Every structure is written in C-alpha cells, then in structure tokens.
Length: 482
Image (tube, one colour):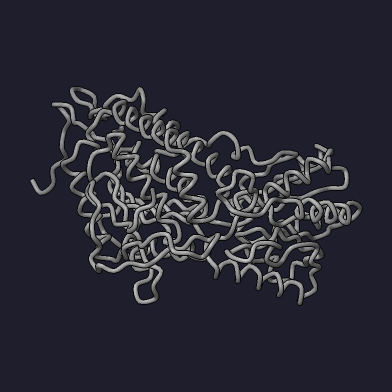
C-alpha cells in the first residue's frame, strides 16, 4: 500500500523532517501524483547521523557476534523474497521499471543479503594477543557510520548492494535514496525492522525536488559530515566525480559505482543471432538503465548493415507500455525532463549526421507518460556528442569499424566504460584484443553473467583493521637523557 506521505526514517521511527514541507512524486505512466515525500535537509542528515552514532556506540549491532548478524541478514533476504511483488510494484510506480524485470531485481537483492551473510556466518571474535607474543592478531572492527547514496536506476537492488555489506561489517547507516524513487527505500525500512534490525542501525533521509531545497543539500551534508567514516555512491558519472572530489576534501573513503556504457564489439565472424540478442537485451532491459548497458554497438563493416537492420526490426517489436503489466518489456522513464533530454539528444545526433533507424519519438498509442520508443541510431561517429556522452535510457547507437585496431580505438573512446562485450569466433583475436580494451571487465561471446547470479559482496570496505602489539615482560624500553 502506498503511503500518502513518505517520511524520514530515523532511530527506528518515522520522523517529521525539520522543514516540515514535502514534494509530490508522480507516476511516470500517467503523470499523476501518487505520494508526497517530506523534504530532508542537512539538519535531518545530522539527526540521522546522531541516531546512527548512538546505535554504533551503545547499541547491540556492532557488538553482536558475527553469526547472529548473519542470521538477521538472512532474515532480511527472506523478507525481501516474501515481499518481492510489493518491491516490484514500487519500482514500476517510481522509476517505471517493467514489473517482471523489477521482480527479478528484487530476487537478486535478497541474494545480495545472503551473500553478505556468508563471510561472517562462521566468524568468531578475535581479541588482541597477549603473554609472550609481542604481536597480536589483526582485529577487524566496523569502520563506523556509513553514508550511502543510491540512484533511481534499479533503486531497491542498488540499495541492497550498498546496505548489505555495511550491515555485515557491523556498521550503522545513513541512506540517502534518490528523490524520484522514494518507495523502495521506505519498503527497505519496513523489511529490516520486521527482520529484527535494531533501532538506529539503518536511517533514511530523503532529499527534495524543489529548487529552494534540492536533494543535493542532504547529499552534500552526508558527504561532509565528520562522523561518517565510509561513503558509497551509485549513480550518474558527473555527480560521482564531484562526490569523489568532496570525499578527498573531507578525507573519506569512498566506494563508487558510476553509470556509463559498455561497448559491444561485433566482428564479421560473430554468431550474429547471439550477438544481436546480447545487444538488444543489454540496451533495452531495465529501460536501458543497466550500468553495463550495451548502448554503444561497434559493428565490423561486412556485417554492419545487417546488424543495424536486425537491431531496428527487433527494437520495433519490443513491447512498450504500462510497467505494471507483466508482458511489458520497456516502461516509461522516471520523469519527464529526462525523457525530453533523451529525445533532444536523438534529434541533435540526427542533425549531426546520424541516421535514425527506428524510434526517437513517443510510441504510438501512448498519449500520456514519459515514454520514448526503443531507439536505434546508425552511422554514429566518434565526433558526435551522443557517442561521447552516457545515455541512461532506451537509445542504442551503432558505429561501423574496419580493422581490429580501429575497433579498439573506438571502444577506448567511449566515455565512462563500465565493461565491454566482444563477439567473434576467433578466440585468438579475443585473447589479443581483450586486454587492449580499456575496461576492467570484458565478456567474450557472452552476455553479462551478473544478470543472473549476484557478485561476491565486499564487506572489507566497511571494516577497519587494527593490530595490537603487546610487549613481553622483559621487553626493554629505550631511555634518553639519563
């Protein structure tokens, strides 16, 4: 059930914001308001940090034996599974994710909590050494308060990836979700409370859409707060770069997951059926908002026209519509301004010389909502703005290449690469070109396996290690000035 007003969640309770004002969030399918969200500012961040600090200093969570924390993490995972339909409905209503895909993402969110529980399930408390041993073992302690900033792109799964490892480490948390998607975070508060998470361990502060009280105020206050020991950010690359600078200024350790694109290289000898499937799914699943979206396709000249034609034909058959319909494959974008910006980018690309193979406009039969038809732009050149800027939406760009060297050059020109896909039947070429692509991850003749099982969870980022040195009774101490 959607609350009339979404409030801050501080110290285990729903709290009024300091400003006592709210903003409206609208259904991206209809444009109608579905809830009010209370505005959170720096003062609300401070209250949340105080609650997190109390839970850290005197609450049970950081002192709880690790296997008991693991039990609660698994209880959270079970509760996520039980409420997967509610989570999917919230993500259809907020960011407009197709409900069938959102439900899969909810399942992966539950798996993230189970994976976070694994490394601590059998962990025992480790104390400092003593006796004749001069060096005690390293003791891992919770780093402190974690400040987490998450996007509207698959919001519940993004929150799970940030929250689960911080909880596993024993940290307390202040979460600042994106303003356009408040409901998933509200559900996370309900789920963690029901699973037995102690009060004050998870605190949630929403920002604002209003110009006079922008969400950046809450975000910046969280980044700058002196009691926050760890920061996690997922979202748009430009914002992420600013947060990186701010984190350095405030001497904070930061984990960042920046939005971008993953170029998909299709060579003439590739299995085109599988390559086309990979390209389409990567570009249009989750409304084109996947972090490793294949929204930049590089196709070798002998198969270029075929690739463009097949991509356009298949894109035109993608089912676009109400995200609450299980048959929908592509839903609306979260807000009208983003939809308008994407359409403007497409028009600019056409003016610069790109060819619109399909899409670029509102789909037929959908008079309301923030809809953009699945779009395929061909003949995109590296000099065009749309080639160099990340696109978070259903816009796929195709560029031809001739040689292996040209393919690598084009792939390296992609802004903010988050991975790369390489399709060829020549495995020697794959072994040679893979390391040349400027990306941490390259998938050869494969979609992104992260679309299926979840990745290991990095708990270590939220820990601090301390080695306690204990002197033996006869250890001499140097003396000066005797």
